[in-house]
Image 1 (cartoon, rainbow, N blue to C red):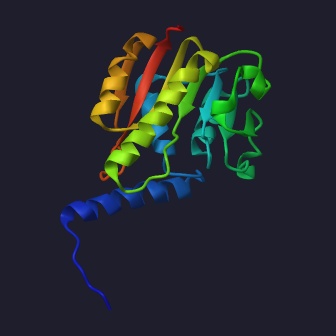
Image 2: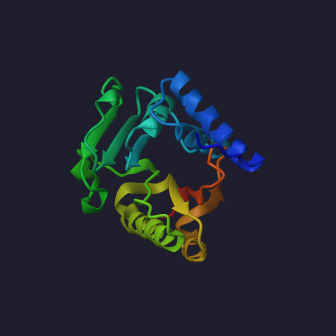
Length: 209
């Protein structure tokens, strides 16, 4: 039998993981990442009743579960992902799901909707390699592509949340995007694993270019 000892720091990492994982299971959420969006929304009031929300790379769908409840029956959440549609979300009446590449979109009409969203969310991340510089570059590439199509997807005055991996290049990119929103800030939610380099960029009141 292999035996080893964990440091107190590593024990804390696993305790945090277990806490949010178990909490998500107990509340029938599809992933622990729901608590990241919950904290962001509680701090910045991203979502409101009646909103139209685009969730980019939604799979498995915990953010969909949160937004569907928050926006209510008068709202609509549209989830887009290259993964097969998650039928576990089929009971949510104010949700539509599409299997397609978001970077192929040319207008909201591609999602059978007639206008840009009030809120755009993205928890997308690249397939990681374990090589920090490569993973950082891949994450930033996704973020850059989302910003490039944001004028198609987000209405003026809308709100935006996107995941990004920490790096000097990421910080430089963010500085160049500050005029895109009345307020652009960053948050590392409490439920983020301590070994993770991710944080979330939050844009409030989009200024359409």
